[in-house]
Image 1 (tube, rainbow, N blue to C red):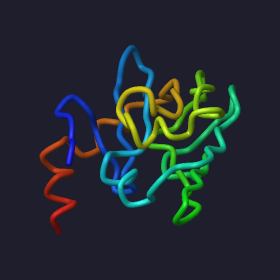
Image 2: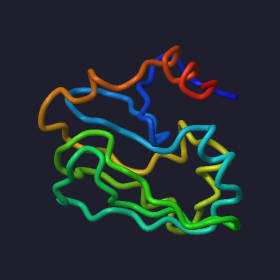
Image 3: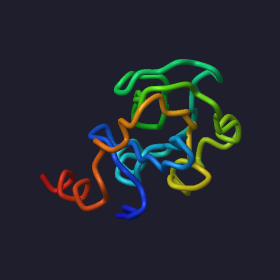
Image 4: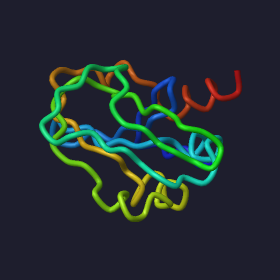
Length: 125
């Protein structure tokens, strides 16, 4: 299982990359494996205000429909439009082409998220 060291992780299995007060995120390799083949992604709206822990996107797979939760609070400033026609990017490259959205973080909530070591231990528990 791939758990990049340079990212933060949530208990809901989202990954987060912080750059210039913006949080780019998607679902972890563990999560994409668990949901199966992704066939559709309902993306959030640009400009949407979200709160950490709030469901604001949906992933549909051959196994289930799963909510995606905002890892931090703030404003959605970018979405990965490529997922509309290529939902499989989430399975193929969850930390790259499979990113879901970017949020301009309102505070510093990302500091409370798990690092790679803590996330690996969380998965083992």
